Image 1 (cartoon, rainbow, N blue to C red):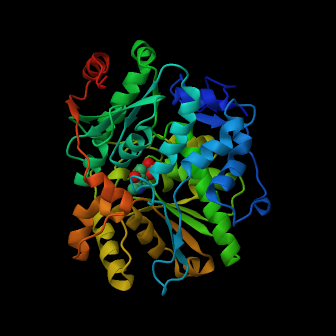
Image 2: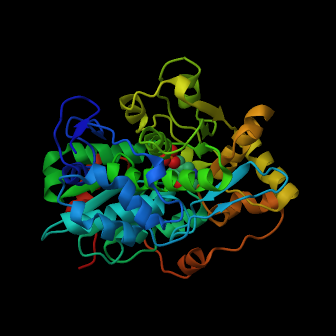
Length: 432
Ligand SMILES: *Cc1c(COP(=O)(O)O)cnc(C)c1O
């Protein structure tokens, strides 16, 4: 299988090269040149996720040096459960796909662990430096996945004052090969800084930089696999093709869902739920794609004004007719958390609440027509500062999140400028 760049300047890369490079050198994003098409009937809904994922992803690894390792990579990455639960028995069509049972309590654990397992096999003698900009959850997942590996060092850029207290803790609590850098700016500044570092070929070469953001295809492939697995499972148990609702920011998750559908997963209508950031919603209403500065919301991991994976949607041939975008502002996020808790006792995180709200907004006929999977993207405890006052009780952490609370933390701080990041990297921020 070969991979091309969405900007058109590059073709014929193997998957390993695409993963090692992160973004394509022409500034685009890597995509497979041919879409493998599966017959979902050939997949056993009872098979464990790791087995299913290796089978689902095998054609994308064809001819690559990682192909013989794919089973082991999946076995290392998919080590925690992905339950499909019914949050409210009075709404039996609504299913939550709980993606938050991993080490840092958000779906980004899947992508980070899968990518690091690939890097273990690609790095060679010298470690790679994984640079990741984070709006809150990516950095924790990357730090947790990188900790203790000889093949990688991780440098995490996060926006000062824009992440929840728990998120900051889990950005800053990992071992010596992980450094968290607080950037005096917003998430878009962090993303710009990471891009500028990759574009500086001397800096990038000196530190063997690569990306662990969702511009790296290695983050998205495992997501397409768990999406397909969930769809096959729910289709088998319900006898109908489920719809999918995905809380969306940078559009990695949304792209992975559309990729899984294009590869033959039994998925009906796809709804992308956003917060008040309107870029995608306006595009879906036919107003063109107009990037803009991000606005801060309760669902902070989705505060994105220029989603980096949008060009992958276009490369997949997706048009506004192929999906629905629901925009959910902070008041509706808060109301949904309050109402669903009162109705059923189920607690959504602010991101997952956008999906629950999008389900409520479906026409009654669409709600009844088929089962629906709402991606529950993070554990509510990560956003206790938002959720606890709304539901009026304390939240309990999952066991892995409880483990994070006792760890020592450390961070560095810089201005949102490339020279500041360059100086910090060159000075060697990692303890010997
Ligand atoms: C990252 C994140 C999202 C947004 O996912 P994208 O792939 O960036 O669209 C939604 N919810 C949570 C909890 C996240 O961490």
